[in-house]
Structures are given as C-alpha cells and as structure tokens.
Length: 211
Image: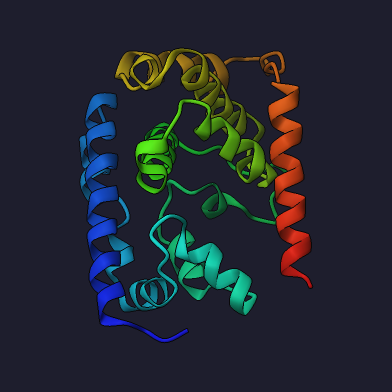
C-alpha cells in the first residue's frame, strides 16, 4: 500500500485526538502522568510510517497491516515499549503471566475506552468496549486477575456507563477486590448472546484473512 502524505496528516491528527481522550480518562482516574506519556512511541518512524501507510480512520491500521502482510512491525515495536498493553507482560518462560501493576492496568482501561470512542465516533454505545473485549481482548493469555479486572470494568461500562468507572475511587476499589484479594474472586457473569456474536465475528474475520 502506497504511503500518502494526506494519510500521514490524518494519522497524526488521529493519534493526538486519541491521546487527548486517553489523557482526560487518566486524569479522572488519578494517573495524570500516564496520560501525558501515553503512546509516545506512535510518533517513532518504526510505528508512524507503517500506520500512516495502512491508515483507514475507522479501525486500527495495525490490524489492516496484519491482514495485508501477515505481520505488523509497528505493533511488535509498540507492544514492547508500552506497559499498558497486556502483550507487554507475556513471557512464555513464566508459569503464570505477571500481573499488570495498578497504574498500567488503569491506563489500559483508559486506552481501550478512548480507542473505542475514537474509531466509533458518533456511533459509540456503552456495549462496544465489552464487545471488543469478547472479540479480541480476552484471547490474550494475560494474568487471570488482570484479565478479570479489565472485564469487570467493561461489564460495568456496559451496565452503568463510563462515568461510573472513570474515577480513582472506583479503580482503586475494583483493582483491590480482584487483583489484591487473597483468593481468586468468583467468575464474572457472561452475556452469552453478545459473547457468541463477537466470537463468531472474529472467527469469520480470521477465516476470510486465510483465503
């Protein structure tokens, strides 16, 4: 895919719009510094050029590149430098994937909520973060407690809205109840129909990419 100057500009603006949305979420959750430094590696040549080349505007260029080339080197660069991504913490030599520290787990939430809104635009609804989690997020072999924390937040967004979760008090309480508890909490409820719909969409997408 040809690199267009217009897409470079559009991608630059999208990054900054996303960063601003993440920053506002981080401020509400009491992790201001994480909001300031969030995703700075996206401006590096290794990430920016590829992402501008595969820019779409309504979806992540990483996924577009991955389907076109079979790999996204921008993503490999990005996930190794940003601790708010689940994939940063994966280590095949660890018996259990390390748990994501509080500030990065909260930044992860702020990022996913902002990204969903950035790409969905005016069509955003409260079920979208949970749908995205069912389709993509929970396929990652992350630490069980970190995974439960994230899913709990997205369930609460679905049931109560963003304002309910975007606060330091909520994040501290929820992280403590799930990630710092002596025993693993009981499994979270699953919205079966939504879960099956998103799994089917994912399987269909993978099948199409292999043709």
